[in-house]
Amino acid sequence: MIRVHQIALPLDHPPVALPAAVAKRLKLPVEALGELQLFRRSVDARHKDAIELVYSVDVAVADEAAVLGKLRRDHQVVATPEPLQRPSIPAPEGFASGERLRPVVVGAGPCGYFAALFLAQQGYRPLLLERGKPVKQRTADTFGFWKGRLPFNPASNAQFGEGGAGTFSDGKLYSGVKESKRHGRWVLEELVESGANPEILVLNKPHIGTFKLVGVVRQLRERITALGGEVRFEHHVTGIELAAGSRQLQAVLLADGSRIATDAAVVAVG
Image (cartoon, rainbow, N blue to C red; front, side, top):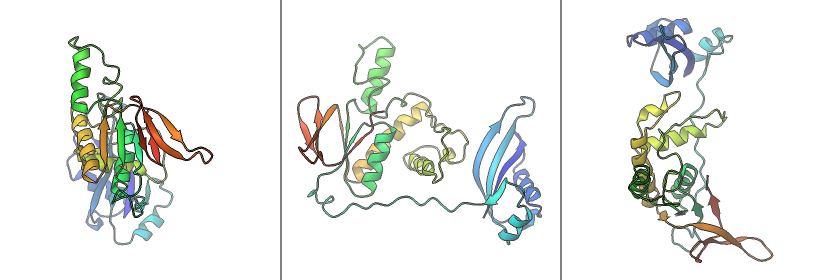
């Protein structure tokens, strides 16, 4: 397929305008276009009296090489990249049966949850430890404090608890980071799988939405546990234990004085 960027159309354009504009850019009749797939959509509001929707689309044509050759000087017309190949690191024998120590993930924010989800998908049965409370109780504590009904809870508030510091934001999902392997796409796909609106896959600056985000966070947790992982709340990790000599990780240490044996940990504390 061919990817065509920067197709700008009026905000109220009819549906037929998009394939017509793509055909014009490719210097082909509309009838020569095959399947059209929306890759990205953004809003150009720099001119308030002429707001536009700007599209990037993938389109199938009969002779892609000929079209790309004809338009080689147009840098907004390129071959569609190969689909993202997700990494695969299947767990060795012993994790499914519990014979091997499972990895520990510290922190139930975005990094922690996606690390735990990936490990669970690969069969490692991760244990995720979070100092705060589940998102439902955390929401009650946070809004109770904001409204003056409850005292401030240092471990359950707008900063700490399931979902991380951004749980009560509007769920912005974009950054200025450029990545060649497009792992950000995997994150978006997993969020959709967990209940986010599929539109986040094509919006240039996607948002999940504050109240929708809370449900997505819960669904991420349920997916991790369904795959054999475990999430423990109100477990405050304060340190690690290393073996003498080898300096190999032996355990993570908790604020209550207990220890959890492990030989691998992901520290995702924000």
